[in-house]
Length: 279
Image (cartoon, rainbow, N blue to C red; front, side, top):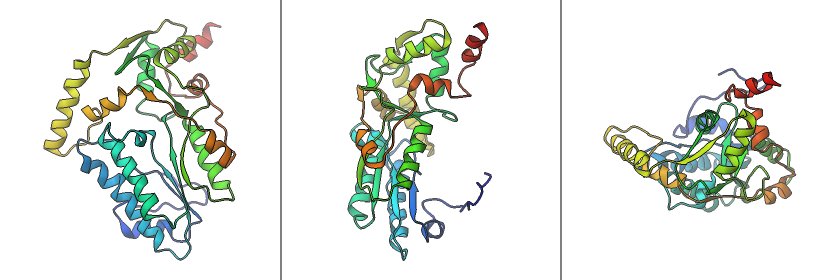
């Protein structure tokens, strides 16, 4: 990975005390966005999301001057009963609040984040560009979204702030009440100039591979993405949130809603270029 001008890359991970110590020593602010999103057991998530967060806190506590801390959590922490991942993100937040009470800490809970480089949502949008929107849960389930550049802008706004903003804040792209799959299909339909059909995937078609993935993950120590736990997240009916509290606290405003975000994503389907050529 090439270093940015004036930056220093410190090799290591959340289990390496020496690298964590080098990372935080002399820092004015620390942004904690490391985490595990794949796994078949609670331990696989906790080892990184909970234990790793605790290790970072311990490193910060040992510094002479305590830096501000920004932790990128997940909206999934709002529903810890749904999955091992969601539970681990909530427990990580609790570690920050209970064991790091003497460290100025801001916790951000972004919803689904998409944009250039995204490996999770862009395949869904690419399939939609071909005319079909497959949903794991109800097509009427509602969810907020956030373009990756708006998330970056929120982090920069926090860094530039003069005051310690403590607490848990959600972020969204500013669309009231979020989206459902019909809203998303209409946006993709406009961009790609074709009709999009919204189809709910039969439960068994996802349940079977998710169950197999989980069993193989436990047996061989692999970290699958699609598991019964993940399906519970995907089938949850309400992932809507509101970022106005963070907007007031850090003078940040989202600038990109879904249609503009997809248009600004260069590795999105070529239908955008094709549509432009027809004009």
